[in-house]
Image (cartoon, rainbow, N blue to C red):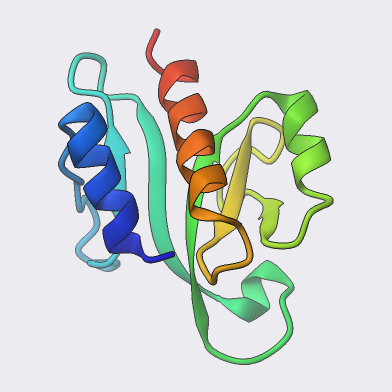
Length: 118
């Protein structure tokens, strides 16, 4: 699963282009609603050490909003972590390394979109 696949999905399904709000982090892409500007996704490359993952280097993650009960269950699976740099009760980080299926990632992105729409 690649960041391009996530961005293409957001464009195709919601007609959303990413925002790149931080000059210091030019690869960090924010997906936000057009009407209320609320975020529903954040793509980042984060050092594995900061995510308490083994190995060196960075990994691509997608942060999405999630129902807290579901989030606690999902965090037990490989490839889904407490959200990096966001509310860990309501957000999760999905590691984009192929561990989580494309269909599940898109479903979680859709859920996040709907949770943040209001």
